[in-house]
Amino acid sequence: MIKILYFARLREQLGTAGEELPAAAELTTVGDLMALLRDRGGAWSEHLAEGETILAAVNQEMARPETPIKDGDEVAFFPPVTGG
Image (cartoon, rainbow, N blue to C red; front, side):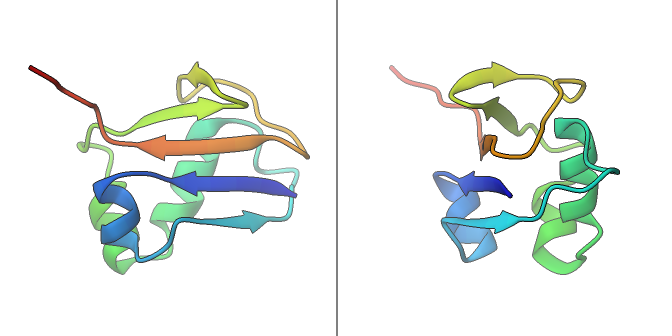
């Protein structure tokens, strides 16, 4: 299983703080996972769209779309954070 966490406005927009998905052969990278989630349509395709700036972390380390993922990993998605 891959544990997925959603933070900040993304959690509100998607209506969930997280979920678990079974690891699958076609899910090898963060980008693959985002594409799978976008394919759900609705809020998923809108808020995880390719033009949206969404950051990701795998096992609490910053990740890029090409970062590999595997069974047992935790993947977090969150919007950029700014401060003053």
